[in-house]
Amino acid sequence: MGQIGTFCVVVMGVLSATLLVAVQAATAPTDDNEICADASGDVAIAACTRAIASDRYRGRDLAKLYSDRAFEYGNKGELDRAISDYIDAIRIDPKYAHAYVGRGLVWHAKGDPDRAIADFNEAIRLDPQQVLAYTYRGNTWYENGDPDRAIADFNEAIRLDPKRAPAYNNRGLARRDKGELDGAIADYNEAIRLDPKYPDAYNSRGVAWHDKGELDRAIADFTEAIRLAPKYALAYNNRGNAWREKGDLDRAIADCNEAIRINPKYHGALLNRGLTYLYSGAPAKALADANRASQLDPNDAYNALWVDIVGQRNGLATRLPKTIAAIDMTRWPAPVLRLFLGQSTPQAVLAAADHPNAEKKKVQVCEANFYSGIVALRQGAKNEAARLYRLAAEGCARSSAESYAANAELKQIRQ
Image (cartoon, rainbow, N blue to C red; front, side):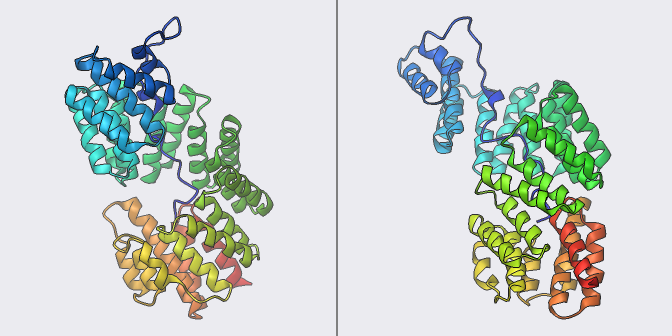
């Protein structure tokens, strides 16, 4: 939950448009090979298919046709077809590094980071100057919880292409994960200097300013991201979180409303709006949002925890015994769920929060303290709950939901 609405989406998508190697002709494309390379969508797919069937192309030229068609299938979300075409491209030309990069991105989109990294590794082995492979492998390391490897890959991408703004932005994300906020902001600054119209960099910097407690700067950056990308739901959500911390709940809810209007399946924005309702005295509205968030993503353990918290505040019995059937109970925050179910203790949860990665440990300890505070309050131990909430308020990133909720819980205890 510490990441809901606070992290910036790493710039990968299903496939990145920068992968499409297309030479812009002076005139409109005149044959299927050119249309395959220069067009997009179904038009490009049809042209690639005709060119492949023509039997005019061999070697790298034929592999490129399969790779270009795979790119278009990936953009359409037809990931199995994309994988199949990348396999054919690699079979035809096993040294075609570009096809390994493309297939790696599709494996990533399919939720298979190990295969994605293996393909990026092969692309780099074949072409050590393959900047995209370093960039996307760095993104995969980052999303897999390994910021040090991610930073090493972004460093190499920047060395190969010092003007690559996304590499600076994404290195900033990894630095933020390590708690290096000043270094992260320096990277976001450079990304914005290289590309002043880069909304992701403004959004990323806004989150870092929020973590530093610079709420006005955070709001300014989120506002600029929205100006550049008016349908940027994440930036609306993040700005809503900053307004909420400033105490402007009307603006906070308005921004969450807009994020949800743009993306009705954005469960993070629903949950953030639910928290705002909960701590502004509207528990029924909070429950509706928490339930909807959980329906949209029943595999998310934090959704389940907040449904339980908000449900209890509405006088409802727990649904956790049934809810956990859809949740991976081998990963954090499974120990917290067991605590809520009465199957563990706060001491055991705190021990389970330990992690070799210092920043990962910090996040998990923050969450262990906050959710243990919820349980202590349920048991009537107000002093212990307040102690745990204070630890969470001090140890959680300011842009996290747990930080806001810990401070709100402390206010309620003092009343």
